Length: 98
Image (cartoon, rainbow, N blue to C red; front, side):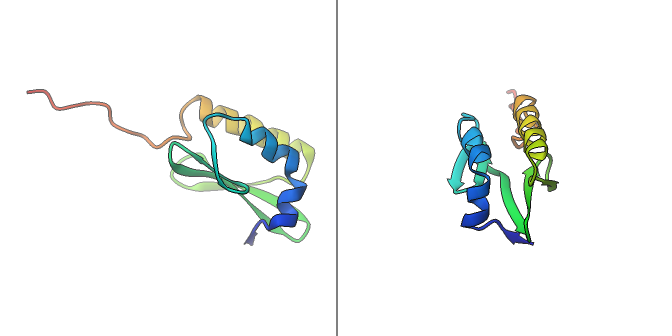
């Protein structure tokens, strides 16, 4: 399955605009979003079907993104992942005490 080309990304225009308004995401290249400096979301195409790869843990999960309902579900998942911190890599905040 190939990464989404320009024509496929054109079909995702309103979705991409919504994602661009999310301050915790940075679009490094068209349709490829990072969170906390780590790849978080990008898109693929297969025939007429579109898919989103979203990082919910260490690996990406592929979800359908062709239909409006699928895109709405994706946006909810993005909000949940960013809201509970699962989109960001785990970092230790503990320090050695002397």
